[in-house]
Image 1 (tube, rainbow, N blue to C red):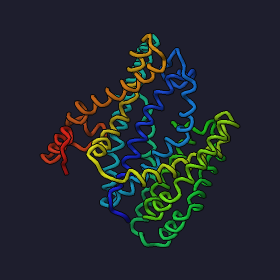
Image 2 (image 1 turned 180 degrees about the vertical axis):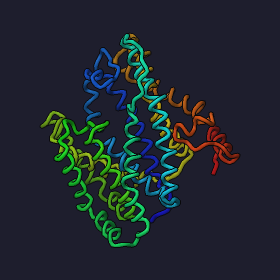
Image 3 (image 1 turned 45 degrees about the vertical axis):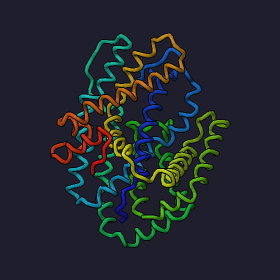
Image 4 (image 1 turned 120 degrees about the vertical axis):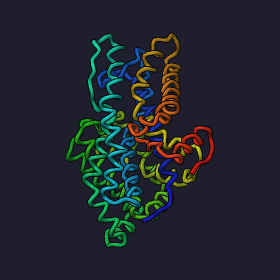
Length: 368
């Protein structure tokens, strides 16, 4: 099993969460926003959904792929008990805390904006993603530990050869096609708290682990053929846009989804596999920002949508507000208040070394 730090995966995870924020803000400017519990702008920007519809077929599966890869790296220095303890601290604790203390906030803001009676309603909201990941770890960890113990076994040797072949990698989409044919989702991009979302995530999580388990074979493949994967993805998206009015059959969207993902992994490996102080900071901030971003963008919508400015400036304003406020909350509260850090998936700053690292990073210094 490889042991080097994969900075490209860290970068891609950060970028994916950044795109998730923009995607959620774009929903505010769609006429159907209220139907899925979002505050809605009275001035829609329906054309904004054209690029968002390209993003929405792969953004969530991509994060599940990356999460499976993360478990592979976590296993290098952990046994089963240590993995469960670490995943419980990193995933289950923030999920429970968020269920009771974070996601109800944007529901209250929604009620306030539409003059509804205010009520406290604990719910998963966007944190359904964390619940899925924790379940996947429970289900798949026996297989993962088996592969760890048999790293030179026949199966690992097989996937090295299989994922090293561009056609072998393309054939992975067969599993995702079978999933949509069996689950028959109304919309491919309906992932949240659906069986379709659960099984797409399970497949992506499993294959994410297997990709890095195969060693260099997968990375050399996507590095060499990223242009092919992205080219085919663009073709399928163009067909979806021109022929199917962005609603192509789900089996085509499953294939398109994986093509985007393989291409993005290749581009990331080619251009982003290098460390930096900025990456170290952002990779720590990404998880807490994901947890808090929904109530922040709702607050931004409440403040900015009533302004008498062009709708494009409202969109930019909500994006800027969300980014700035999330940064302030993370930098000056979440990462600096010791008892909040574990609630947002951060390691507790309980030692002098950890406290020194936090101070050094906050001032732009290098700390190991």
